[in-house]
Image (cartoon, rainbow, N blue to C red; front, side):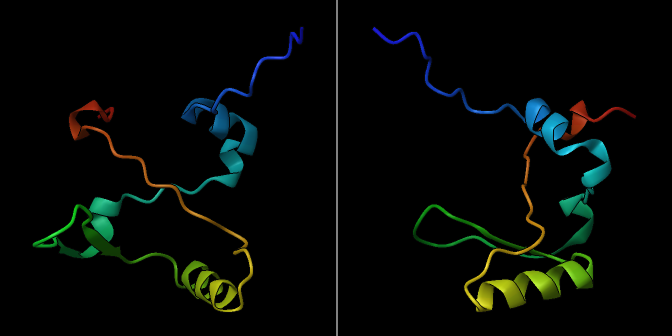
Length: 85
């Protein structure tokens, strides 16, 4: 019988620890949103937002070539009243 446990999914705190604070840029999507489309049918909204042009250009170029972008983004949704003042 194996004593190996299946890998647990990373929590956000563990992910940040592994990547390192110095390697993470925080962008408040609420401050950079340029559009929101809510579908009449289906269950997904499309939210567009501005970001650093260098990140956006490299991201789009890599995806267009079928490559992995150098940077990626992760959106976290949480109640705004939980943000420390």
